[in-house]
Image 1 (cartoon, helix red, strand yellow):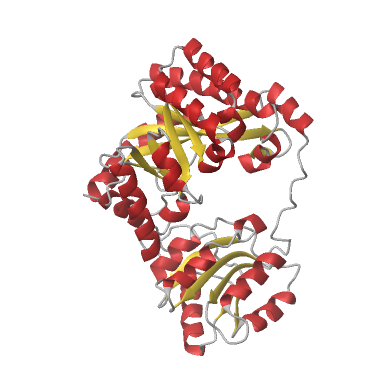
Image 2 (cartoon, one colour):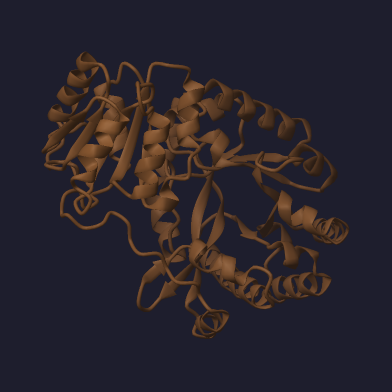
Amino acid sequence: MATPTATDATDAPPWAGRRVLVVEDSEVQRGYLVGLLRQLKFGEILEAADGNQALRVLDGRQNCPVYLVLTDLEMPGMDGIELTCQLRDRHLTENLIVVSARDPRLLEIIESMACDDAGMGLLGTLVKPVQLESLTQLLHKAGAGRGGDCEPAVAPPLPQVALEVLEQALARAEFLPYFQPKVAMHNGHLKGVEALARWRQPQRGLLPPSHFIPALEGTSLMAEFTLEMVRQVLRHLHDWKQAGLPPLTVAVNLSADNLADRGFIDRLTSLVAASGAPPKALVWEVTETSVMRQLSQALTNMGRLRLMGYGLAMDDFGIGYSSMQQFARCPFTELKIDRSFVNGAAQWPNRHMVLKSALELGQSLGVATVAEGVETVEDWKLLRDLGCDMAQGYLLAQPMPAQELVGWIRQDRRRLRALAEAST
């Protein structure tokens, strides 16, 4: 389905009336961008000719950050890369879009910068001349935001969570898995899901893994946490079967310490055996880092798991220093290609080539290939053309509670089938 533009939407877009800053040294190009933003119903549109002028404009509004900065990359004085760093570090905008007519690889530098962690959403990059439809698609990634209510754009960071707090949360059953579907690219069928941990924190609501996994890593509590996630996964597998869903695989992440611990592997496999679930229904996801940390024992336990019939997936393939070497020597059944090589691959030629090489490696070794972070129809079509087996990402579905999976597949079955057929 095409993303609606601001002009054909029945309701006002979430950015309507918001404040935006355009940074462009060419007066003609700046005027063109201002015109696009007016068509999109933005409110106050500020202008600057370079990065230095942009910072002076924003410094006068330190307690009132703008909703969006739209900046050129190549400018005299302060260039777009330095401006991006300043915006990120000083929390001067909620959202950022960067445009350029130069080498697309320069735009990729911007996309690789850690903006989201600093509270600034990098919506994406655009090649000049900017088209209204492409700009609108990026803006739909932003959400409503505040954009002009004159409050800081960045929420205060969470304090370091004490291990005792996490232990109490585990005892109160506050951790639960959400599930993100993995869809077969040739027909749009649901093939499996990945279990993604969430913390249902009474005061703060639902929290992602970044709020608690770092504190669990390297502690004895990680084993208990993982086993609790697996217990819930096994119950949901039974419920989905009773609800009439076809056999699914569930991917569960294993930490480095768990993977290397023979005693933990014994407890894990005993838990699955007691549930009656077939081992082939579980795929244990590990990263290259977790394999390398204690290589000999990790390989031994991976071999045991494969002999028992479990699936094994190398997660985040391509971001380690020796991914190909480790993938070739380990008994993996799935290759999960990191989103940094998937997202935007239809637009960026170098990502396209890395993605193509990764898929060819998986295909030559006879393992299933899974692309993470699929967000656009263009990337889906490219992956389909390159022979990728499965896709996972927001184009298909966001992570959801277990009880929503049945309704989701019934509602989206036709859309997914049409997506697969349109790619042929």
